[in-house]
Image (cartoon, rainbow, N blue to C red; front, side, top):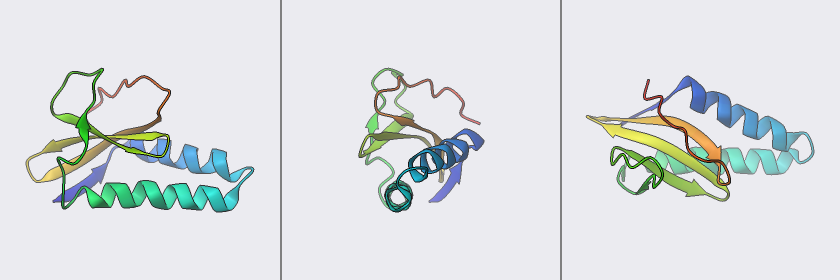
Length: 97
């Protein structure tokens, strides 16, 4: 299965890593790697994540990694990473590219 990142998801990942790196560079690399590994794991198990409760759309799922929510859309032979948000943020992942 092909994985594609939306512009928003790429920007969010970069922002997360840059914010953490200001004070903890090693931790930033670690969370970046954890998030990327979780995304790559979806290739083999795209239905692994749960449906995002507040969106009530069975096509948009999420995988939680530490305090981050990776939201993605499974369609045809593609997984679209829609966004990554901190667990305290309410999902607004409507942009399905």
